[in-house]
Structures are given as structure tokens and as C-alpha cells.
Image (cartoon, rainbow, N blue to C red; front, side, top):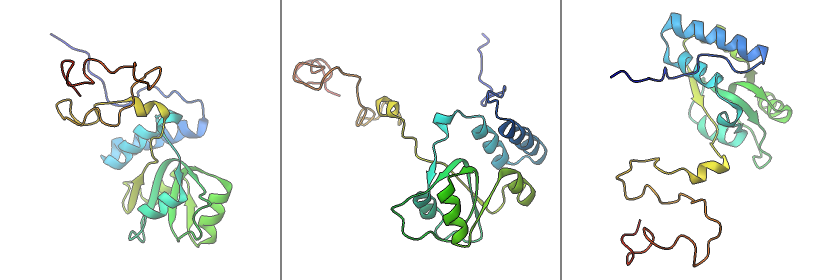
Length: 184
């Protein structure tokens, strides 16, 4: 029998942003001609919706870039400022956009903020780069189970059920008590 198989990444560009469309064209070309996994990953992430490209704060960025001098941080998304961080280290960052204060702080520290087309000229295969992404913090993600394997006993730990209330009478029967069949 023939089954439908997914082609992996998006084929049709959904966004109307002309800059993003041009970047997708550029990196698609680079991915095809250079055979680099970096470019293919960037294309895949450029196709993603806003919810799947969460922003990265300066503090998280600085944490990931410690002991990585001379490398460029690459974020397919936005870089935001972190007021809790007192001093920003010197680093080279490539992102789709920067908030005004984040850009000011990076430049003031002697670093640089570059765009993806500048990165394509500088490192077409993504050499000396660190590809990063922000934390997925959608509220719906709290309800998703099976991040490990289904046979793992901890599959349902920390997974929030869609329950009307957290009281004594709600979802406390089979599957939640040893005396009623089984307990997860």
C-alpha cells in the first residue's frame, strides 16, 4: 500500500513579508548548492510561524555564547533586551530583528548585530556560527505529553490535563488511583 509521506519542511511560503521571502529564496539556494545542514535548518526555521520562533533574551544569549569567542550567534527570530542583566558581553549576533535596547547594548559592548544576508556573504555554509533558538513557552505546551517514549513511566509527569477543576471529585478515578484499576 502507498502511504502519504511528509516532505519534512514547508513547500509554500506562507508569509507576505518580502524580506523573509527573499531570505527563504537565498537560503534555499545555498542549501541546495552547498549541501550544508546549517542552511537547510535556517530555511526550515524561516518557514516557521511566529509561535514557533520564540524570541531570545540577551541573558540567555550571553549564557550560550560563553567560551565561544570568535563565533557568531544565529537566531531565526527576535533578540530582546534583558533588564536583569547588568553588563552585556561582547558578541557577534545575527538575527531577523532586534529590539532597540538589545541592539544598543550589543553595539555598546563592542559587539555587532548583523542580518541574514550579511551572514550569507560572511559564512555561506554556517562556519563559525552557533545556531540558537528561544524557549518554547506557549501555554498549550504544558498539556502535551509523550515528549519521551510512551512506555516510559514518566511520560505523563508534569503534563497538565485539561480539567475543569483540581478538586477531589475531578479526574480521580480509574488511572489515577491504585484501587481503581491502575495508577499512572
